[in-house]
Image (cartoon, rainbow, N blue to C red; front, side, top):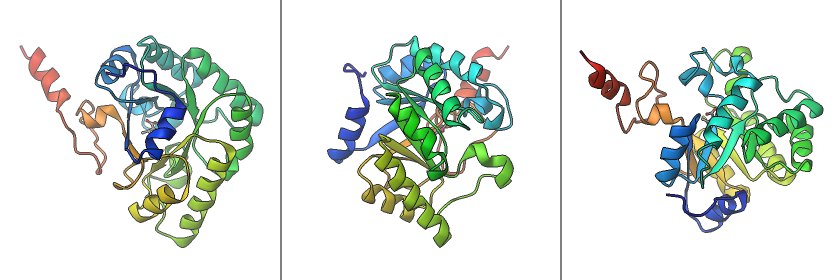
Length: 248
Ligand code: KIV
């Protein structure tokens, strides 16, 4: 149970203490409440809800009103955990839309926002931070780019990708992001980034040496049995439990 309110400063302090940060997705009231009661310090209303809750093929279909709806539901749990939300696809293309949409997610109850990308969205990130909104970066494989990339590919294998990741992570940390999600980054590069920037890295499919780990709760709990990423070992089989509970 998170008896104290977790802040972005506390998330950074966890890295300074050399402890690991646990993070999970929560898209609604009961899940945010359950995960908070279990003591998870960082919750994300991720746009992965597009697939595991809304049935879309990828995150590019998720809209701002859908994100606001789910952020409001998760925020009603009043978690002690820090609660963040993803800026969805095409919601931060300009500085003005990035700030306006980040403010909408904060008004819905998020305590920080996350957006995908590095130096190419630096003006948007700087403007969000200048508006007083805590920001979490997202580098490596960027799910909102699935259409142009033609799939979900591991990042960091090529030297150019390695150098871009270092430059992007440094730029985000210098701009004032409080943490960076590293998705599908090769483990040695994720380790190097974690050691070279002062803010926490939160890995997903990026090996054990990030400062924290985040997973989609539906993957961890076996609640979306039709697809499980290769790097996830489900700790439960909720889908089977539900089917067995309702079997006639
Ligand atoms: O959308 C999401 O849930 C995410 C996390 C898995 C990092 O971005």
